[in-house]
Image: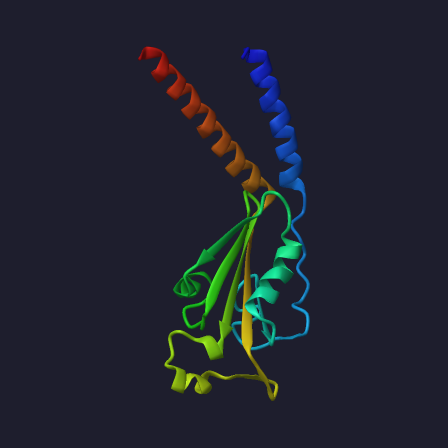
Length: 179
C-alpha cells in the first residue's frame, strides 16, 4: 500500500471520527412509570446522578436505556454489584450494575436494586429493605450516573490513541522486516 493511499485512508477515517466526536450524546428522559427521587444523594449532591423508584424489571429498564444509547459504537458492560460503591456512592444498595460506553464520549452507569432479589440479604430478612417512597412501595430503585466528556478531551483521547496505534504498527512492521 502506498503512502498516499494510507494517508488518504487516515484522513477520511479522521473526518468520520470527528463527526462522531462532535455529535451530541443522547439526552435521557426520566424513567417512565417511575417516581423520580428527590432524596439526598439522588440529586445534586453527586454530579450527574438521578434515581428512580419503579416497578419495572431489569430487562425493561435496560431496554429503555438501550433505546437511547443505540448505535454501532455502544459497548455494554456488566459489572459486579459491589463496584457501584466505587462508581456512585459507598452506601448504595445494588443488585446489578451495567454500563453503556460511547467510546471517547461518555459512560453511563445503571445501578439497580431490587429488594426482593437482594443477594446480600438472607431471604427471611429481605422485607426490611422494602423500597417505600412517598408512601408507595416499589420493587426497585434505579440510580443513573453519567460520566460525560468535553469536546477537547474527546479529541485528545482519540488522537492519543490513534498515534499510539499507528506508532505500534510501524514499530511492529520494522521488527518483522528485521526478522
